[in-house]
Image 1 (tube, rainbow, N blue to C red):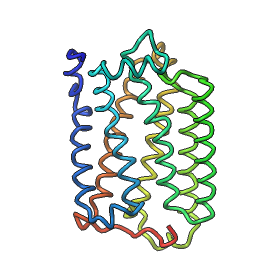
Image 2 (image 1 turned 90 degrees about the vertical axis):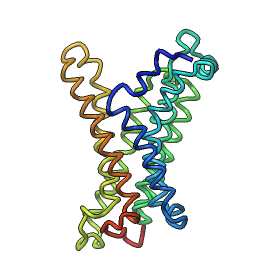
Image 3 (image 1 turned 180 degrees about the horizontal axis):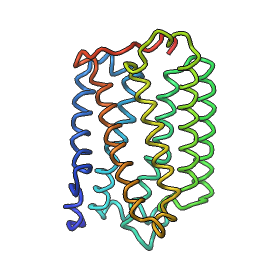
Image 4 (image 1 turned 120 degrees about the vertical axis):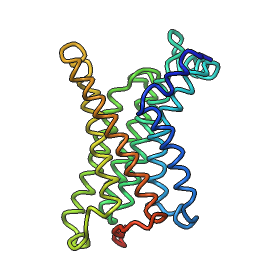
Length: 251
């Protein structure tokens, strides 16, 4: 156990917010009636938000408990730097997160568009399996190619949702700003776009515009914080009796 890392678990207000949001998210979800918890429009947003807020505390946990993290790294082939926890972020954020996001988006679409998103999902899973099987990039290091594929698939899913939003008559007389699915999909799009742009430009900006890169990371983290609040608000709407629009019946 690396006790010198312990203070970094609470190194800034964003890190602290992850622990607060994790507790609040679980309290809100499990206070919902069981009938609501079983519905996809509540279950899938909860899973997405849970993954998002739990990954950093979980990552710190693996860094702290090297008796667990070390053997996992060695099993994955990382014998030189067994204290790395990139494997966890690759599995959770670059493989599981796109799957959950696409399932969430698919839930808000009519049958024809659901089929399209299913094909996007199937394509991503197939690419991810082949990618890991032939080890294009080691799972214990940054997997930029897989991240790019996952980001593209999520953005395609978001664009499909917006197409439905603009073309289906069910939304004509609806206040979109009171529709939970609109905010959920919008923040998937915003956060995915920001994260991907930051990732692909990091190497160049580190050498040429490091101050701008730091600003991008701050914006990215702030957007992630707002995204967590949005998902918690969507889940808490029935408990707080907030006025929201009902998703069209086809979904």
